[in-house]
Image (cartoon, rainbow, N blue to C red; front, side, top):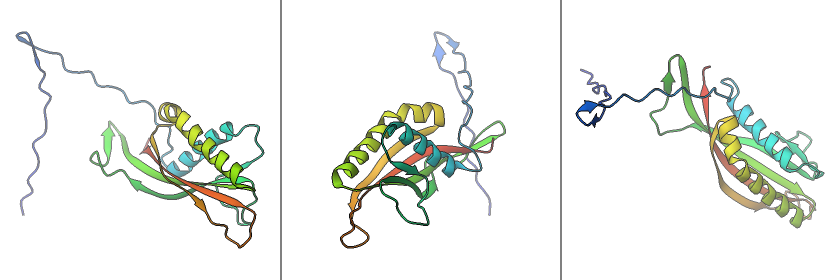
Length: 179
């Protein structure tokens, strides 16, 4: 079976007057901030850092993992619930010897509190904090997009439990490189 390959694209500069315009200069990519071997942990730790700063002065524990001992309210728990490679853009891209893919990381942020008002107030604070941090996430941490995909109140795990939970789910787009 013969393999038919696509013809390579060439840059053809536009005409300026009766001369060809200069070809555009190649742009050097900024250094990558997401560790190649730990992209999920890097993203989760970045979100934890931003939320810790947002909750300064408030007595709440922010954790990257659910404790094996269960929930100790009040707390905020950030959990990784899935990842996938970004389907658009042709998959892997390469600049010199650096290869990269865009990775979508899905995080669930659970807010546990002793009353509904605190739970809802903290949930709003998380939404506000991550929205305010969008520019910093992009410029400093190379997290190019963050989208809230779902929020919902969760029923108590035990009848008559006096602990209230809200779950917020986010998708974050970052890059993973071999550099």
